[in-house]
Image 1 (spheres, chains in turn blue, purple):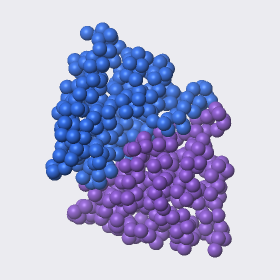
Image 2 (tube, chains in turn cyan, yellow):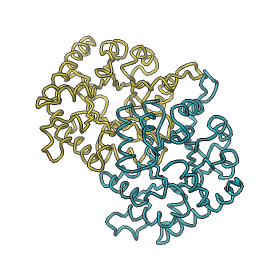
Image 3 (tube, chains in turn brown, yellow):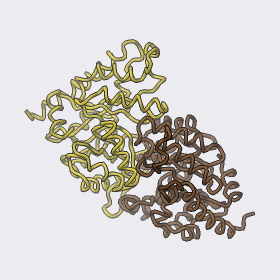
Image 4 (cartoon, helix red, strand yellow):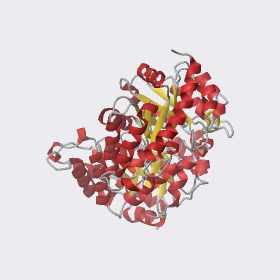
Length: 274
Length: 274
């Protein structure tokens, strides 16, 4: 999906919600256990209940890999079920040398038909460049993540510029691609960082985890993080997909997604874009 | 596999060679194409030809994931075929938040029976800690990698200590685990770094890629990087497994592995350990 289509979808559907599809076997409602692939069925019902409320889905590969070979099948079928109307982010957090990155790019972009993949920047340009050679495909680079461990290294000040490492990563990686093919992960748990982020990358899209279960505040991040194209994809995973463990799990997931979408619609109105 | 067993195997077999099993479909010899799973057959023949010459095998997950669901099966069967006599490193370069890391740990340690997994440290302690809860299992943290992109971020001086980031990662991560469950990746393409590495982590094992195809020099890294337990696993992938594309690929792989093992045996003699 190209940037124009993504931005149009955001304003048409009045949402910049991304839903994380992170299925844990222990959290799947009991009444789905009879299906040949309970996790696929769980995903399908969540997707059906939330299609109109989000512009993106983000399955985290770890949850599928933990299921063994079957998990890869489930991932692949989930992506196919989502279809072409949504922006699909393979949350894989890969990062490897050049020839290996090229293999990942082929796997996720060509075989699995995902729109974007998340990448860990630690290994540098080899980890990112090979993903930028694909038309209408995106790389989403971890910059300032939402977890506790983000303090360990990402926030270390780097002496050449007296800036934290995560800012150096924005500075450097933005020169490798464009705002048409590169996004950055900035956690909602660091609202104070968004103004600084926008100084460095005013036009890029940001993928923002950490709203909901992790405590990030939607209004705060929008106030400092939005640009004229919205420029945000705000992700919620557990807060939506595990809203209930009963027969009504899909319905409750929709309610939680609708809450967020309603807030987003109001925020988008303020952008006065169209 | 625990540390004592690993060290004993190194001195018993007179080798600290790790062989990277990174099968690319385009490089598999033609005469294997008739097998139901040509890549598994390729791996099996490489393993049979090199078992006595190495202490570790390191399949890089990217090469298996690129094959789709079948690839996961091939990976799993390869690990089973290697068996318990060798140290098996899942070269996955994962790095995610806590609950996700726990899933990866279960998948690679319990379901797939690997001894170790490589981890990217960028997301901090959440990425590493969950892997340290498993008895006789190891985490191998990327510190200074062998690729060109290692210059982008790993070498940035961090102002608190005026040390490069990779050194700060050694400093910090060594406090999370012990030399019984933590190793570090240090690329052979940075021979000048090994003396510094040993100042910070004198007792840890290091996984050293970049000998062979990438140009690293075995003697240089041993001179500065060895400790009394050897403390090195030196990996070669392409230099061994793609030594020939003909019917003799396994025989040629053995020749290349034997060259390295012969050098290693001589170097180990100098340690005068037993």
